[in-house]
Image (cartoon, rainbow, N blue to C red):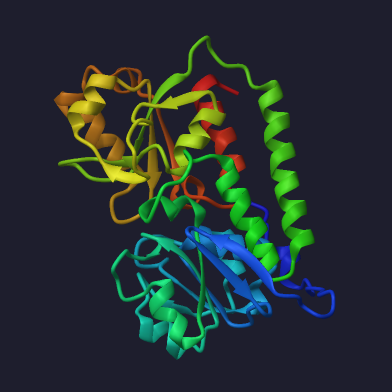
Length: 312
């Protein structure tokens, strides 16, 4: 795999002189920056990749929330090679303050919890500004159904915050053009494929609902999330719902201690799932966690899904 950050590692970020106050919308807050952050921290692998793809490694003092659940692939290891992981899972307030951070890129259930000790309000007294992942805004208020615009919005807002607007706009324009070109040649069936996203869990499955990025990606690939009426992002549902809606394809999200192969085996060997079309026809596709959550790998992941749905 060609590292996407290699060329950016030595990138010298050009600024345009005096930095006018920059204001962005972060979930339900309007956040104003008087200057670009210099000591940023990102949480989770996909948010960290957004920072890296914008060439912001030299503006970061570390990252959090990766090794406790996920593994870094070759691409990411190179991207964060010079940065410390400050916390294997969710950071404490003391960790962020101790790193002398001035910016935290996180989300609700992506490094912050509603009512938890790390929130925009609790970090503000210490001079740490927070930008929240757009997909996660559903946890604190209303938002439209997820779309690829959520990912584009985060890159563009980070571009404004760090004064790398040109880089952000070029990236987003490239992603949009790549997806549009792919959709022009994508041949699908007469109806969207019924798709279930299996993240984790055996007693009750954790899956992607109406506001989680896989729903947008599945639709772009010519499928339909069987629980796209679930008014949540990532959440649990009952297996009865999955059986009743009979998915034709199961998307496994790969991370954590339980491997994708073990998740597939659980479904293939459980008599309760024997009549699912996806199980009868052994139709599974694996997305790495970093592909299934908002970030720079989403467009290639859509192509992976489409190829699994409809063949190359």
